[in-house]
Image (cartoon, rainbow, N blue to C red; front, side, top):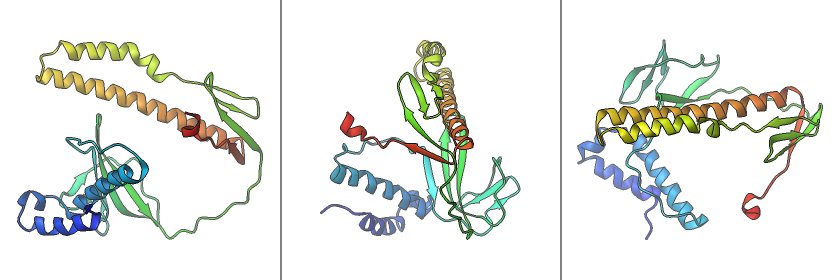
Length: 227
């Protein structure tokens, strides 16, 4: 019989009574990890994906519930951890309440992603305004029906020389030394910088398209069928 998410939750409750290592972690964080495992095995059994690969560490963990008034002056109150100093990216809008928090580890440091909730009713604006169609290509990133061609940026290609220098520095360091760890950290931060540049381009392009159109149409492609 396959272990299910709910059967593992029952086993977790029993194991936490005797295991001090599990008691040190918030119960809902452990339940979220089991939910990820359940999702991975469902993808294996139902969708034809490969067997889940073991990872030495998670890069994020989730707190599904936060206490009352968890946001303070440049700090946030997390279960078990208590008040943690933070640099707020932007203030939470009035009328919204922080409901969940995900702690993420990246090369540049630790981040907290908040899920906020409000009872505001989202209006349904009528479909009107200037319409444009977009098509994603190879020679150009996007071509629009208004005869606008957006060049395809090559962030990774432009960064290959710098990556080669950084990786060469890693290879020259003594294996397992602190200097090698610092060199690996520099490589990881540079990869994160490439990813941030790519995300920034996508968001600015989306903003540019939305500023000049009331409706945007895109072709729905069956990528698996094309492959």
